[in-house]
Length: 228
Image (cartoon, rainbow, N blue to C red):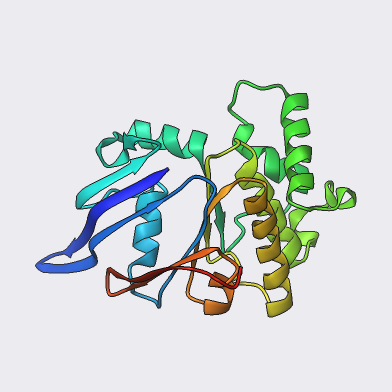
């Protein structure tokens, strides 16, 4: 599904050049659950932005479903993100005084669907993400951190994406809640979803079936997680 060849990313600030990625090559198959782990400044977030079509590499090639994403126009990248990619972030990014159901429906607002169709799809995604039906009409700021992240997961599923990117999804959660959320990702993986997790925490990375360690802009290791 994903193939990266010699990806490099250089940021330029005046006369200063910073190499965030220094030639990264790997592939990810459909249905894999992969954690990309590394300390702050390792290049993992830059790599996620490229894989998620939020940024372009300085050089190298990135293929998604056989298409060379690194040559896409801005409009093509927007379409790719809308149709094939779901994002779950550390900060949840929910509208605080909006119901759970409305938050999940939001990405469909400008789609060619009726209000009834949007609501039905949102309900299905919330149930799929393990959210209790009794909370569907709660405002998102009335939820616990774990519940908010489940709503964010449901929203990421609304367009039936090929890949779900989870960027430090447990960063704002306590240990117990973090494990509950990661178990939700494991369940999605078992249902066939491709999941790419970005984290700096080894304990969280251990929920994935494969762990790619990044340091100083290069892949340090790429191993199967035998504990799974």
